[in-house]
Every structure is written in C-alpha cells, then in structure tokens.
Image (cartoon, rainbow, N blue to C red; front, side):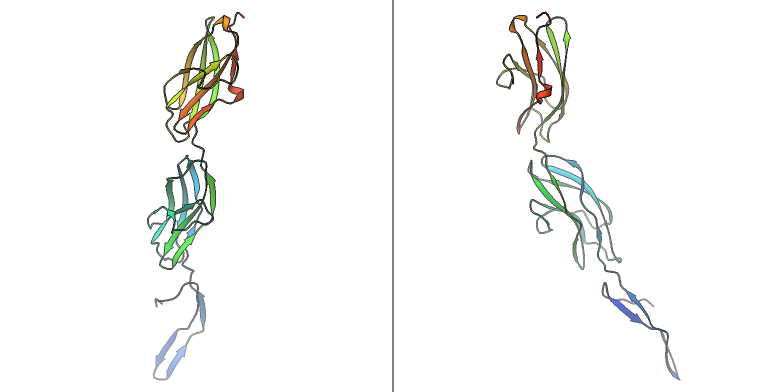
Length: 236
C-alpha cells in the first residue's frame, strides 16, 4: 500500500487488516515518522572576491523527497539576510550551487546565507561574512639593475587591479624622498603585469628616490616602503 497525504515530521501508527465473514483481523501495530521535508543547505564559500562582486559555491540537497522551488544566495550589510532583500536565483535543481553576487561596494562587510525553498517554506544555511577589497591596485614587486654606467632598469610587478582597470602605471622619483605622482614620473602602459622602465641617472644629481605607482578609478597606490629604491650614480 502507498500511504499518501501525510504531514512532514509526524509520527504515524499503522496496522494491516483483513476482513472475511467472521470479522476483521489486525496485524501488530508499527509506527514511523515522516521526514521533515527540510532541504539541507550549505554555506556560501567564496572562491573569487573582487571589489564589487563575489563568486562562490555551496550545496543544496532535498529532505524527504520534497522538490525545490527555488535556491540561491542572499546577501546584505546587516546580519541574517533573507530572500526579501538581495538574492540570486539558482534554479530548482539539487547538488552543487555556484553563484556570483554583483553590485557590491568596495571595502564593505557583507553577510551571506544560502537559501532553498520548497512548498513548506524557505530554509537558510549557516551565515558567513566577507569584506570586499578596497578596489585599489596592488604592486607586489619592484627591482632594479644597471644597464651601462648611467641607466637604471626598474622592473615593477602590478599583481592586481583591485577589480578596476589600471589606467596608468610607472615610476616616480625625486631627490628628497617619498616621491609621488606630483614628482617627476615615467609611465609604461596600462593594466596588470610586469613592466620595465629605463631611468637615466645623472651623476651630478646625487641620490634618487624611486617608487612605482599604479592608478585606477579608485586612486593611485605606491609600492610600500621596502620597495622604494634609493640609488646614486655608480661613479659617485
């Protein structure tokens, strides 16, 4: 027999029976409890975090054979986000879930929860949080070598654009320390990656202080203090 129309998470008692002309006989009583019907929902594990977006994965499985009617990820700057706010729509299938959250603000903490909806309601996974990067580019390496007696080859690695296109990159230098883009500068292209600039060194100019820079729409960053070059002409 297939027993239908039962309620989730409910204990039922049942007996088999048989009827003949002598009357009704019953079997021994047995009991069972129906499954809750709640889907099993994981947490949002981000795999790529940018200034204005985050991509991550999770899993959603059904409970008690109740089909999903929706699933995805909720996010908010306040704890315990729900589907009444920002959320993705990841379909109605079970298993792995890969979603991208868009329209985020740089340098901001967000709370996330994966959700799954069935005919019995919406269920949420554990809350996780992350903070978006500030959207600034990253300079990870500055090195130099001499080419001849008076040309310094400065090599720079811009390892990240912070989620925004690097529109200018190069080196700036002066003779007083802590050079900025308001000092004398030499540029080399756009974007991330490695580039090299040839800087002529004048013996009569004394010490050169050299810093790399990279600029995107969020501003200009410089190589940190241990990447500032302090050099003089080799004959000084």
